[in-house]
Each structure stands twice: as C-alpha cells, then as structure tokens.
Image (tube, rainbow, N blue to C red; front, side, top):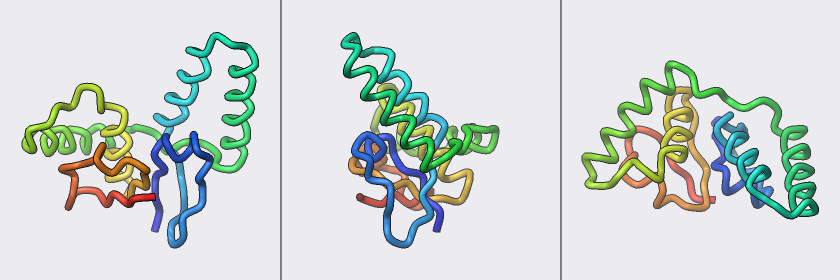
Length: 127
C-alpha cells in the first residue's frame, strides 16, 4: 500500500515502513523549507539544507496538493469540526491527510493524535 510520510518522520529520517511504498507530500517539502529559513545559525541552516537534499534524493518529488486533495480537505475539515476540534494550527497536517486520501494512500506519523477524527476517511498509521 502507498503511504504519505508525515513531516515528523522526515525530520527523524525514518523513511522505510514495512508493507508501505513511502511517498512524501509537497506540503512536507514546504514545511522543511520553512524550517531551513527560520534558522539563524548558518551551521544549523547548512545541516538542515543537507538533510533535505538527502531526503529529496531518496524520496523524489512530492505528491502535490491538487484539486482532488482540495476536495478531500473539505471533508477532512468537516470531520475535525464535527469532532469538536479546531482546524487552525493543524492545517498542514490535515492537508497532508487530504492529499493521502485523494491519492488512495495512508498517512504514517509519529503523532496520530494530530489526525484524530479522520478514522474511516483516511488510514492513519502510527510509526
């Protein structure tokens, strides 16, 4: 089965998961890029840039947040709101989940609580 790795797995460089063909969302590349830009220390910035280059060499292009993912995001937001939770502050995680749902993939994450309420719409797998 195909799975989209959550950004937290990329930071930990935990890229292989038995039984899953791992992919990354373009949103995770954006999150990692933000992490590079917010760092002031040039040594830490270089370390993060190097990590992203290694990850991109292994994982390749990200799965895009396309129109199908945008449609799935509407459902994801509705499920989260129906569960009494807020979307703000979790938007990128939820967009990653919508990308996975739109492309018939699971989400693998270290923080399954970030995806609470999406059961039955997208598979969320604990790493």
